[in-house]
Image (cartoon, rainbow, N blue to C red; front, side, top):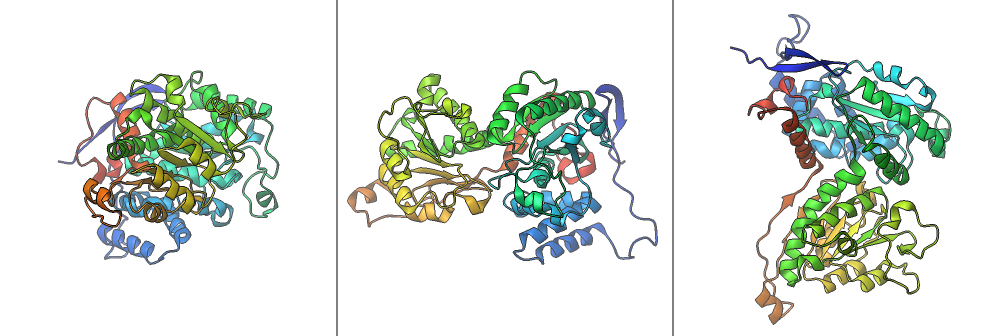
Amino acid sequence: MPVRILTPQFVDGIFKGLKIAPTPPSPPAHGLAPPALDSNNQYKRCLLQLRSKGERSLEKYIFLSSLKQWDEEMFYAILIANMPEITPLIYTPTVGEACLEFSHIYRKPEGLYVSIDDKGNIKNVLKNWPKKNDTRITVVTDGSRILGLGDLGVNGMPISIGKLSLYIGGAGFKPQSTLPICLDLGTNNPKNLEDPLYLGLRRNRVDDKEMDEFMDEFMEAMAEVFPKILVQFEDFSTEHAFHYLDRYRNTAKVPVFNDDIQGTGAVVLSGFVNAAKLSSDASGRALTDHKVLFLGAGSAGVGVAKQVMSFFTLQGMSEEEAKSRIYFIDSQGLITVDRPKLQQHKIYFARKDYTGPPLKNLIDIVNYVKPTALFGLSTTKGAFTKQVIERMADLNPRPIIFPLSNPVSLSECEFKEAIDWTDGRVGCLAPTRLRLILASRLFSLQDHHSSPTHTRERNITQAKVTTCMFSRVLGSVVFYRNAPTLPPPWWRMHPWLWLSP
């Protein structure tokens, strides 16, 4: 007896009853496919083709994109069964290169593009989306700050596409419930404007006033066309990321979420909680004694810091006490309140307790702050030098070093460097896969006190905190909000049975 799943049906946000979910697609009629074609061999064939491309990640990205467009079921079967291998190909680090080359590798439309030329007609553009009654989540970017690569304009669309693919593979969202959107508000990148193949508008970005008017119309139209949707903002410029999260989080008619500010912070916080406990165990310090030094004061850095504050408040500290444990460095050095023309989003964490001459050198700031944790979100390759990391190890038996910048080519240090320069004592949350590898080589207390040269390798452990895990948490929260029971245990084996969030 075949399994049948009933799913709710909505039209313009109004419940229209239950409907039997689609059954698996029928095989091609006789004669329309080779005689020996079967799904198992085709799966192996596709995976073999993918792996035959060796280390050429961009070619793998192109192959997977084409597979997704022509055989979506096979694409997700490969993704789900090979998440550690495929995730870096459809998202960071490969998606950065895909964005840079997007106008040159473009094959077939995917997602929705809304440009400044559509102002006054945005609702009609949104209505052109063919699956609007199924849509439950969208990732929206304006391409103004893609990873650490800057203003890429419409070339930022792979970010929205890739993130939603992770939600489908990692959290079980229905493919038809997702909507990638790129807002084309112009670009200030001369490389785009001079590229004859560039797919976006050839104009500079609009000013803030016109962008506010556009975004207000866009959000109003989203609520009308997709009343059940969750809007996730992704890779907006720092000022606009905070501005639009604050503008819409309490006023929009649909839920609004910023991954750079809130999502990254949630994932990093989960790593810091465990690293801080291990560090405190090694040093004997109280958890409230931790100090976190951030290199990079953009939307991701400030977003992470606000999440990390909750670590301290959960220890019983007040908001002001928690804030006092966090220090920020930007391109001009340690951020203090006496600096003229300080950007709005930096004011909250600006230090009031430093009155000396400006501190600009990272090693000098480390010596002044004496942090237990050093977070990098600066997109400055090699900013965590050997001198800096060795000083962190001098200050802490178990230093916490999180080089979080994406793509990997812009990471503040390599994971191996953090391990080698601390003699394996570091708790390091590395970029892209966000691997938290703790206790890789633990010093025994007896050996450490007797002689630095008499060490013993013990208890090699590893844990992984990934974007996909955060996606699954998000999926679970949304799922429990809407359904009384868990999905059946075989749900991940049958993409056509996936439940909408």
